[in-house]
Length: 166
Image (tube, rainbow, N blue to C red; front, side):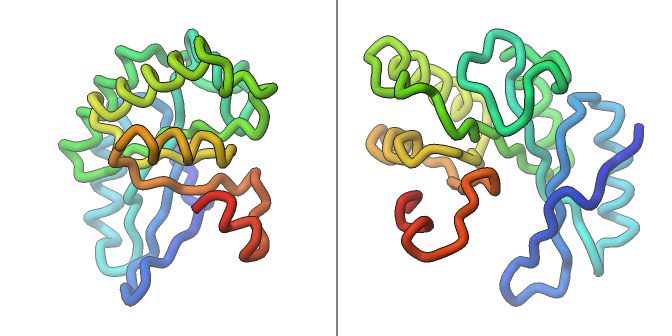
């Protein structure tokens, strides 16, 4: 399985190790290969997280077209996240659609979103990349412990935009 290394380049403050985030292929056979890369290049680079989302029955979308994504159910996601933890790799759930048509404010959709967030937390997901400030508020107001990242599709390029996602 080909691994894409140039998706996101991060440098953790004070560390000399380049940290990479790559898209999840949801193939557990890829994980030992990632672990080998991490071991081989431990002093220079590390794949510290993979990102993706549920694509089967997902009403919230992401920054990529659903038909281009691997078909992943909630059960498959939960199993994959557990496997990642065995290799010391984090999972970043991408909830980064930039428009839900204001449906996130509808009671039924809001409850559905809250149930998804509860499922993610119970499944061991620690990081969520979001595309809407309203979802950041929902995460914070409901006491979820996710580390929240703002999606690049939001084009946050100044302090005022960044404050909307605080």
